[in-house]
Image (tube, rainbow, N blue to C red; front, side):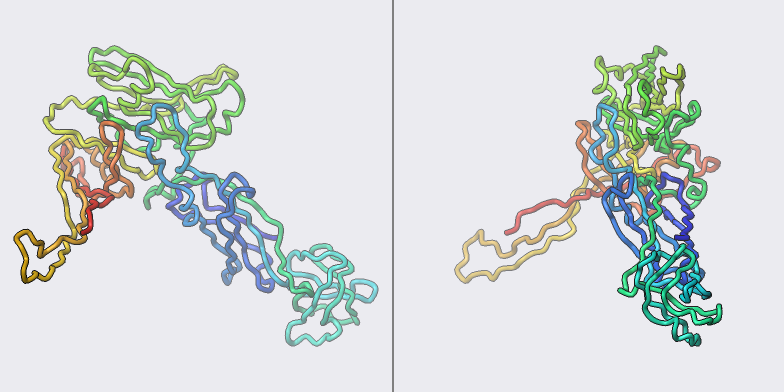
Length: 485
C-alpha cells in the first residue's frame, strides 16, 4: 500500500468544526480504486464501528475525509451535573475515536513487461501489488496492444510487490505493454490498514479561532506550565463571575490528559481559596487521584461547595472565592499550580426581585451559569385554542355546552433582565444567545429546559458603553399539557 495520510486535526478537536484527513496514493489509477474509512468510537479499532465509507479519488488521486458529522452522534452535553458535590468525569462530552484507512480495488495496472524467466512474462505494476505465488489471475491488455498470448488467465509464479510473473508466454514481446491484472475469481483487493486515533468533544470554534486552536492550552497535564492551563469557559476572569445566593449551583470544567499521571503517587488537587468580608482566608482542597484523559467537572457554586465540605465554608460573610488546580507529585518532589485561577464574587447589590439563574452550554461543550437579578416576569403563552361547535338540540337545557375547547397547546414564557454589566461580562453574554441548551436552575437544583427567543443582541463596545444590561425572552422547551374532551 502506498497510502499517505495527512491529518488536518490536532488530536483533541471540537466535533462541530471540520476534522479533515487528506489522503493520497500512488495506486489511485487501479481499477475501481476507492479509499475506505472505518470509523470507530473507542481508543482503538476494536471499539464500536460507527461507519464504513468508500470514496472515489479526485482527478488528482487525492481524497478528503471528514468524520465530524458522524462523531456528533456520540458526544453531547453532560446533563444533570449542576448539583454535583464531588469531582465528576464526563460521560457524554468527550470521546476517543479511531479511523482505519484502506485502499480497495479490483485490479492493478501494469505499464511494462519483460522476460520473467522460464518463458513466462513479468508484469511491472504501477505501485505495489498484493499477489503471491499460486494466485490465479486474469490479465487484460489495454486497447491497442495486440500481444494476444499475454491475455488470459494464469498462475502467479513469482511476485515481489512491484512486479508479478505469470505463467503466460512472454514470446519476446516488447516492453511497453500496458493493462490490468486482477484475481480470476473477481475478488476485491483490500490493502492492510493504517490507523489514526484521537479525541473529540462537543465544542465549536468560531471562524477566527479555529485556525489557531491548540488543545494544549486547555489540557491539564503533568507538563502544563505553572498557572497556564485554562478552564473550559469564557466567563470573566477579571474581576470575576458573580454569584448571589448560597443556593446558587454551578460547575467548572477542564480537560485532563491523564497519560502522565499513570505512575503511583501523583494526583490533582482542586484548591478553593475562600475570603470573607473581613479579609480572612480559608483554603479547602479536594483530591482527584485517578486522572484519565477526559473532561472533568468541578463543583463550583456556593451550594455545591457547601455540599462538598462540612461546616458551610461559603456563608453570608463570604466576599469571594477562587478555584484552581494543583499538581501534587511526591515521586518527583515537584508540585505546582497547573491552572489559572477562576474567581467568583458575591453580588452584594440589593434587589427586591427573585433571582433567575440560567445554565447554558458554552462553545467548549461545558456548562456556564449566570444570574438575572432584576425584575422577571412569567407568562402563559397559548399557541392554539381550537374549538368544536355542537348542534344545539331542540329541547336543550341551560348548561348545555355548545362550544368545546379542543387541542389547547402552549408553553410558559419568561422575561428576564440582567444587572448592569461591564464589557467582559457583556462579551460572555453573547454565548448565551447562541447556546443550543439553556436551563433555568432552581434553588433546589432542579432545572427546566428553555429556549432563547431573541434573534439578535447589540454587541456593546467598551469605548462606547461603560455599563449596560440585557433583556432576554425565554420559552419553555416543553408544552403545557391539557385534557381532551
